[in-house]
Length: 310
Image (cartoon, rainbow, N blue to C red):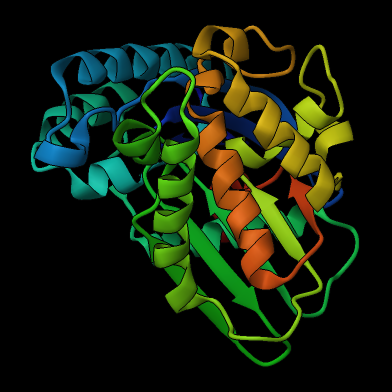
């Protein structure tokens, strides 16, 4: 006998290049109410830089996490489910080796969304998380395989999805443990080379919003959280001077030492230096002095989109 679907409950799944995330939610009085939220470090995009092939071990790990998510969804029986794959699945030549069995496990076809779709969903998730409005602003979602840059002005929206992710940057330029000063300089040079063509020349951008695991991890470190606290992270203002301090501190530690830092999720220490460098270069290039941190992003955007379709 099949379970009855709960049409007031939806489930969103973000199958990222670094981590997989699940959000099961309902709405009360127009607000999102979280019923379950999960995160697992998969590193689906590990080692893809030279081959564009998903590694067998990454596929196995990813499918195991998908099975766990299926078991959690079975407890809530959501009326609508949407699973979205991002950069690793966009780029992998053998993506069907993961997509076919994962879709069968979930009982829903996984969508491999474009960079623009990813950015628009991230923007929806960010805007839902803030009570204030910023006027003109940038949103940067620094992910495992790509970085989405969104400029929202009074009369226009500009979206760029860039081949700049913390997993690939770490593998190519920051693999020494800890990275050397020359590695850091070369990484910064590459980051600037990729960012410059899509950013405005001159002028000051008053608001830069950081979304995704890198941004929230940096906030958690700055706040010295022993456990992640979404309410304290949401809206946190990470100053340029503090980001400089965090970047220097993190780059001086080994991967094991970074992974032992309180407030970081599983395995984040391997890639957090790359993420700090990307956000620091963004601040420099935009002549901004702080990042507003958003706990909401792509995953929340996926879920909100499901509610708008019901």
